[in-house]
Amino acid sequence: MGQSYNVAVIGAGAAGLVTARELQREGHRVTVFEKANKVGGTWLYDSRVESDLLGLDPNREIVHSSLYKSLRTNLPRQVMSFLDYPFVKRESGDRRPFPGHEEVLRFLQDFARDFGLMELIRFGHEVIRVELVDEVSHEWVVESRTRETESRWESKEEVFEAVVICNGKHTEPKVAEFPGRDTWPGLQMHSHNYRTPEQFENKIVVLIGNGPSATDLLKEISPLAKQVHLAFRGSDIMLINLKNYDNAWPHSPIECAHEDGKVVFQDGSIVEAEVIIHCTGYRFHLPFLKSNGIVTVDDNRVGPLYKHIFPPSLAPWLSFVGLNYRALVFRVLDLQAIWVAKVLSGKVKLRTQEAMAASVEEYYEQMEKAGLPKYHTHSLQNDEGEYVSWLAAQSDIRPPKSWEEITFFSFVKGIFRHGENFRDTWDVDKWIQEIESSD
Ligand code: FAD
Image 1 (spheres, helix red, strand yellow):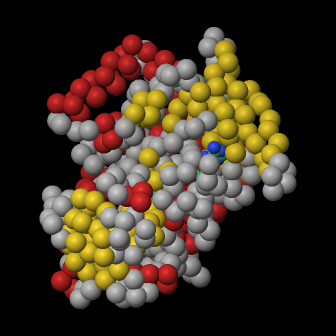
Image 2 (tube, rainbow, N blue to C red):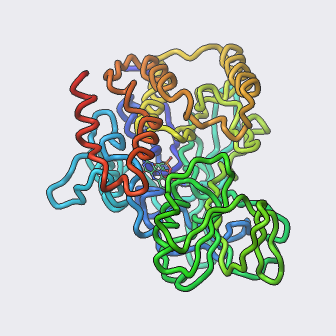
């Protein structure tokens, strides 16, 4: 048995749950703070939307999940499994290879129950402050609040030896900037606050973006709307073939918007729109972390972090699980959680603070040389395989050979091959079986 610490985990989504399990397996004492009343995070569908649909008002009441009602996964269930806990098809469940969101929630609920995690979770506890009080004994104050009545909150401070932050990254909207945005008279919202298409019936809608949300929303809105105009950078590849839609058109990004309702695109085209939906992604948000400027969020780079997890000067007492994207997220979360738990128990050694800081600097320099902006820091688009193998090796895990071939990028390629209806036209089970049979 290694060292055992009193560890706080913030969040009971996929990242927090798998982190709690690994910490518990390593013999740590775990308390999970979860502001919602259930596990699941993103996968806990919430029909409510925020009072400020663009998400710009810092005082708005936050709705955590960004799911829309009809959402199905864009990755097959096999790669949304944990290493030793497969996301299997249940007799009475949604057996489609790309299931609806309810099925993912059920999987996470089962996971929490099967590993006895529910007893570790303090539901309805929102963390409002995480602060290092003593560097030598690495004591952290975690202040959380619970709602007593509609307008009254009760807060409480507790001390932990280590904190793992798993608060998610798909809640704080990133919004497109263009002149006239704030005085344009129509309805604007971020896809975070989109749930169902009915309110767009007969409307002229502009969708900004070209990622999975913009594609799904276009498919769902266009049968009801009068017109849909998609604004995106010309360099972006399109998953959707707009030729299949007789009321949808592509445009370049928005140049400006006018008080008379006109939206002008950079290619000179103009539409008189009624709705603009920003499908423009999300920002990392750590309002509770007081680290004396050691960890900052700069242009969506959370840093400095060694391997996206440990701030070198606070390691291993502060860590992050779940910052990466453009990856098979569940697999990455699992490996990150295993590593954090083993580093804390002392079974796996970290490099020195100086060596970790140098590695972070080197990574930033490589990004700069490659012309990559800071906001790409936690994307694993170009090095998922390498990162996953490195993480696995730290904890002495030998991944199956098929992992080299089954990556996020291989799914992106498959999705493009099968087009916008890939969820129903791609026999992904067969594709995965063929690759796995070569293991
Ligand atoms: P979350 O699920 O966001 O969980 C964070 C938890 O922390 C939440 O429960 C939240 O309430 C809690 N929390 C936050 N702040 C606090 C606080 N201050 N105090 C206490 N608790 C707090 N991934 C896939 O693998 N496949 C897909 O098909 C897929 N589709 C997606 C579709 C959409 C629209 C979105 C937005 C994401 C999708 N993802 C998908 C990515 C998804 O985010 C991950 O699958 C995964 O759910 C991330 O888990 P997480 O635990 O990091 O974050």
